[in-house]
Length: 320
Image (cartoon, rainbow, N blue to C red):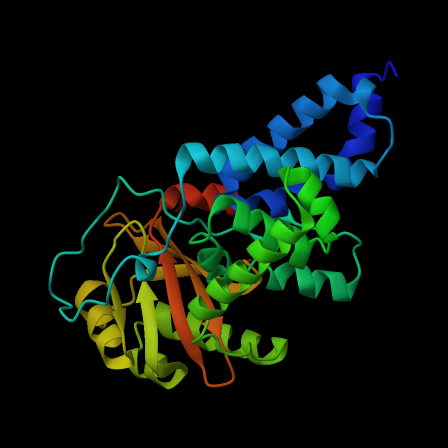
């Protein structure tokens, strides 16, 4: 076809947010997803003359992206959360078990994605399919099960089209889908309905105030009795409101206000970027805390203790 770089970019760029979301669901990492999208566009550019319009451009790009992700999963494996690797700790004073050799699941800022098409219903669906618990559950599926579940349930492709991508039969696709659904449902057995948006915002505001003021009683009012906190890259995690509060009091909220925060949104969930005060009065990036808020209250805090991910959210590493 002899497309110029500019013409190719104009054609494919509208699909970038959706492709990035697709690759993130598959890989559990923004960085890996961005690499996969770049590889997808490079391969599409090189083979565009052979694209004869037998399918839509969008579907053609998603086919390429899915195969790129399958290759990446073979090389790098899955990205878990701490609660997917073992039981909770019962000692808030023990040293946290850091596992740097594990490639952990990463959060993703909602601002990176625009639903296709950009209507309210599509936005809700897209964000729901990015929730941390669901992405974490999918990490425990085989690569092909993961691809089938996402293409059938999120992209809503027919079994025959998925089979063509994976080089298998529709019957095999349906079998993979059935097993994937069952395994994910088992992983999400404790998931609850998310609270209404206005309720979520009110809880985030109260959590922000309590965290900044080291107000453990304020946090107690927001947490459910069986709340969970996990903190990658540490494998240690805790279950239970009182255990969680004892841990926070021991490690960071000892009565003195040490934090400044910025409210963000990650994986379709309310989140908080926490900055810890330095001796010179500046505040250093410490964690992105993603909250699971239900009608009962906060059921889970996933605190990603990696200052490097602040850049993904467009946030500075230091507040002055």
